Image 1 (cartoon, rainbow, N blue to C red):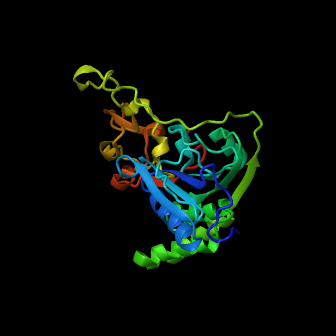
Image 2 (cartoon, helix red, strand yellow):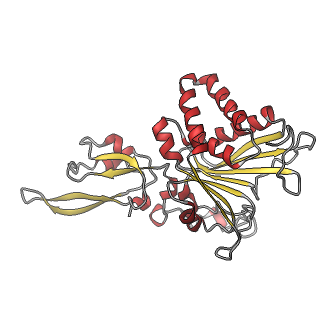
Image 3 (tube, rainbow, N blue to C red):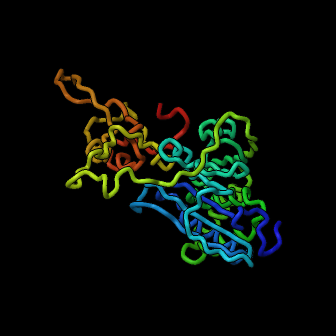
Length: 324
């Protein structure tokens, strides 16, 4: 445990940086605030927490940043965390769509919410080097009836070895006692399980994967190169985009034996995930029949589960191979 007010791990500017990669609805922003509160109020560090996101809604990318420094070292940098000591991935599928791994320090730690083992996760992330901590945060959250953020706070206490676990747990308790006292125990249970139920492995640089430096966003078009009239020359198209990284860990599962082919699911689906085929019914009349869900376009909103009158679509945990 570190001396109060002192951080044993710092970058050349005297900071310890944390970056959380998440999607809206999983509670990354709150997790960052609780972590910062614990560091400042409990450990005596200087600290700040802030987030970056577009439209504030479920399924959209969210980045939460936490930065700490020693109590006698001024913290005057409010810019994004580009080279984190600790990287937290709330959803492992995000690596499919976003450059979440860029900038992770070779001696850094990455925490991943996954049911898979570290060797397989390393390949999926193309991790150059560092310590990999895997925890099935979604499973724990479902069983304790909480969100994954408090589970991952327990894992963060594991990854930040110099953070007093009880201090962080106390900050969590204090935050929930303010507004949701009935949820305190479930979240504390999730925190403890997030700390205990992990798989940890250290990977040394072995040439298997290259280090990915952080790249700042540079717009392709500027004032001198923008098309006249503000024309949109590359419109968005979900037909060409894999939306699976937007899911929070649950998918709609279709039971064709119960399906009445009413198309209520298709009407409410915002991304046309349902695949239909023309065929003949028992009376020989031609009609459309629902055959499957195209999970590539499914962002996991689960509206179809709500509207299905026959109970043919249910929400289930997304497991490996379930969407193949």
